Picture 1 (tube, rainbow, N blue to C red):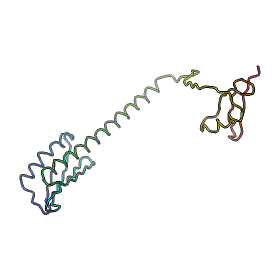
Picture 2: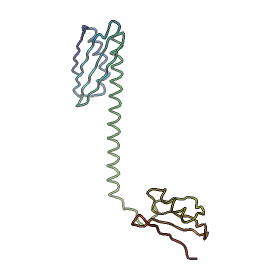
Picture 3: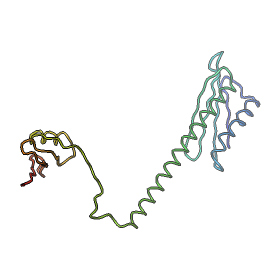
Length: 179
């Protein structure tokens, strides 16, 4: 781990450097043998508060935490907590993406081995049929975007009918039983 600690309007003492290095070992455990570059900047904001900024760069990823506190050590602790949270979140996202992509690979390879389902009912939808007029059925069909047919009980005949959109998308067809 390459650590650079600088102070602006505040001297970076050996005690501060040792404390920051000790706390940064919490970050190091997330990156096994990778090169980690850390830049710590401490500065006095005003007479009462100190600001600690930490930048961590690993494998093209960068993380940043900036906190302000009365105590410099508390500010460093907050920065470490923030950085650790960011790193955990990023690692969890990457692991989830890798898991999802491996599951997709399994699905793709599994589909190639299986025979496609043919001549089987693979989807079933049920709904209540209400007696309505043909004009009302046409209105129901236009309300349901994406549907190309609507089944209903014709109020005039008492029989099940199907109204459907024709390929021209402007006109409708009606299926009525003869008997």
